[in-house]
Image 1 (cartoon, rainbow, N blue to C red):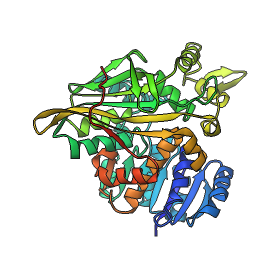
Image 2: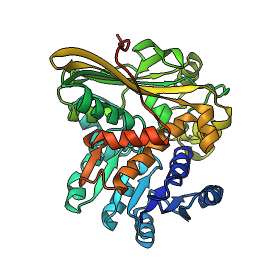
Image 3: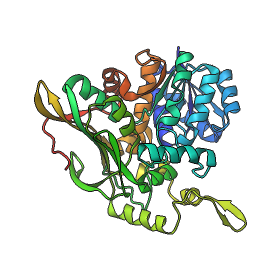
Image 4: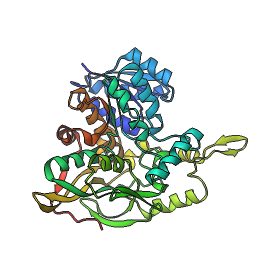
Length: 419
């Protein structure tokens, strides 16, 4: 019997929870917990008639370690699935360590308050030493490795699509297709249309921070940072068509550079339409993407958090969104002494995702891998103590699970390369 505590009840969590309930032989009992218990109750009521999984709910403040510890001890889970916000990764990891429970999440840690002096000092030192300035990086969670090892616990980081599936694609390529990998280009294309003038496909605060930050990539053993959105390429995506894509900094580059050390270059590209970019630049120019508090009518507010309240909830976009996503990795390298190129990717349909679980494909492509990562841990396939990213584990059972539960792979042996 497996008992799982799932923290979070947003768009991605809804997909992950729905998929857990499709695998009741493993996820026999789950508890859904978030600040807003009514959301958990509503989802539990919707899913209960369709599953053998026993579902309970709870209220918890995921920033409060004492509350988390109390909940974990009272429920006694085999695994805590953190599908809340990246701000809360460390507090949930602290609680898991205190309670002796395995941990997983879908995105690496970043702070909510980027002006905190203690965090800022460490951040600025990292910027100077490593050469990239994104607010998110793995170092904070990698620092927990010894603690998890000593307690015999496993922490799985970033089991979404990117990061997550993209890293498993890299591990699969390394295991089966290449003797050595020279370059990796990760391409994330959302060809969907939600009909909104401006909306983000996941948490607006996290999304807009990521997109507006300087881009960076790994080349010849070091980071190269560039102004935001300054490298643009056009690519013809299978089942989507030609789209403009831009080079961004992304977290899996950091772990892939560590775990595939022979790789000479690793880049990440994401597609954006011109309307999205025009809106984002306008908002940035007037200060609405700032994380620095300002005074408004005698109250302190954070501009980007205020903006978040004005934008459509990503969870509401499901019935409006049409089109497909295409996310994958293009590799160059050598096999048996010969040059080789290879491309592995997934195409996911927004409308099909909505028909199955009531969410658009962006949430679907993150929620399904979250369930599959938990499945690997609960069935004993991924159990190495410590703090690990997806590419450190055997990719075969994970990719088999993705194929089975809604994100089948497609392979091209002669892909067009990105300049």
